[in-house]
Image 1 (tube, rainbow, N blue to C red):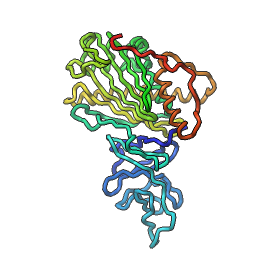
Image 2 (cartoon, rainbow, N blue to C red):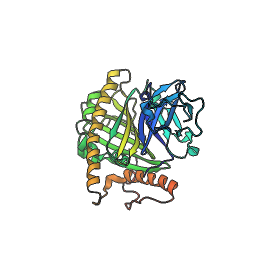
Image 3 (cartoon, helix red, strand yellow):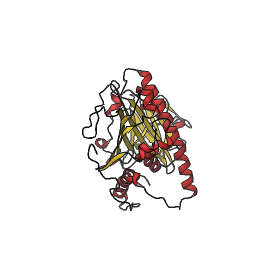
Image 4 (tube, one colour):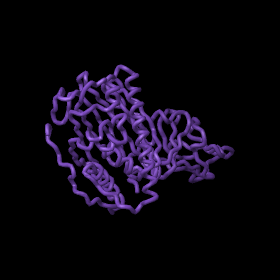
Length: 366
């Protein structure tokens, strides 16, 4: 089950260029294209004549042209041309979806268009700040349901097992991390601290740490589909801890920002839009590329696990799944989605029975 009245990432802006782009979002086929002024349009990917996918057609000055019999549809889905006919048949149109281009993303609203409020779009200004946060990005297609992708991001104790050769490092560091979890009005925020720990390989490659470091991870889930993350490290004992933040302006500090956009394709497949931003050596393009390649390798490792997990759950759907202490943020994230689904459907899909607060908040310095 999906939250429909929400903005979902349909593509990166640079994915929609001269050709139509076909995608399936929340189980529905859509086509993305740019009109003659360069503005984004999203239509149902089905011609109203014989049902051919519009994504197999071409972008023309008046809109998108079906590649089967040449009908042309404008950005609002209205048929504006039927080759050989002097007039367009009544009702010749396809569904148009509200769409917004912002922060290097194309966002689409799959639910009731009357509720498509631009003010609730997730903001990510770092994509527009190439001076301080140069970034690179990618779209991954996962044969895994979106809830499993979300679970993976909400429980980072897996880093030391799945990603030990990149951003993870020592597993014990992660499972013993100090952590606090706070429910927010539209999701959950959690912070993890790994003090006096061995730096992971990705961090060493980036800034050349020689000894142990103090690491932090700050993650916010904005329901139903965005995870915003800030990771960093500084030489152990050299930072100033104030309200759970280190001075990230120091030259010996590693800092990166990650964006995770989770868009369901179907119940069991997901488009994963992610970016990595370099906050430690911004004037060196090779540093940004090196970071991107490290994170890309990390997420390929996630892909292997998530797709295998999805397959096993489809094969053995009835086996019990237990919850452990690291699940606090994940549980809050699932509940945030439940609340949105309940708002649309009037009934909760399910309710977790675990404690509301599995991870007690820590005070700075504890």
